[in-house]
Amino acid sequence: MLNNPALDVVFQALADPSRRDMVERLSRGPASVSDLARPLDMSLSAVMQHLQVLEASGLVRSEKVGRVRTCRIEPKVLSNAERWFASRRATWQSRFDRLGEILAEQEAQPKPRTRRRS
Amino acid sequence: MLNNPALDVVFQALADPSRRDMVERLSRGPASVSDLARPLDMSLSAVMQHLQVLEASGLVRSEKVGRVRTCRIEPKVLSNAERWFASRRATWQSRFDRLGEILAEQEAQPKPRTRRRS
Image (tube, rainbow over all chains, first blue to last red; front, side):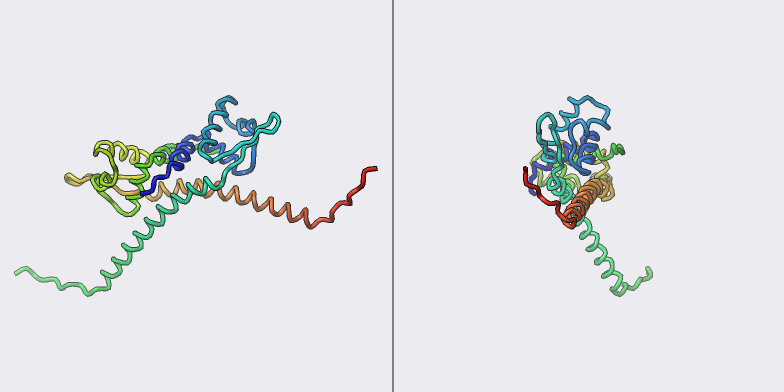
């Protein structure tokens, strides 16, 4: 099985509700750190720590111009994680389809006669 | 923004490569704990610990019949996590579409005359 260390840090980053909120906000468009902090009940330094985790995972990148740090989502990293789920679903679905086929074949076969016990 | 504690434990569970391997295996069909342990380079007790994390997240359920514990995937919990990514993608995509429209409108407008500096 393939090892994908990127998914380790992506899922780790998304395991926190504040970081998911930040990703949700950024999927609506770029935002400054203050924009990100506004709806969250935490200090700016706590927001910066969460931002560091998000940047380390590759989900978010940021750029400082003058005194303002602007953050953006990295859609490719989100898509990569989404694909992991899609692959599991495809595997599970194909197994489900095979089970359906086996069941249909069994129903199509003539039933064995039931014998009375002598 | 909605808080979804279920996603906390689901993403936390999936942040580990061995647990992702176990979910991948179970998406191909039910398996015993020994089946799950076979491809993984770890003790049966370590596998049991990972299984407990997966069960606590709702991603996997298991049932013991006689001496064999059989594990199954819970597709709804996987789908719920996949939906989180799909929602982010939809938001991001619609913003991208709007930006495209704005750009198209601007191009359709007559260009302002350029003035030479006097």
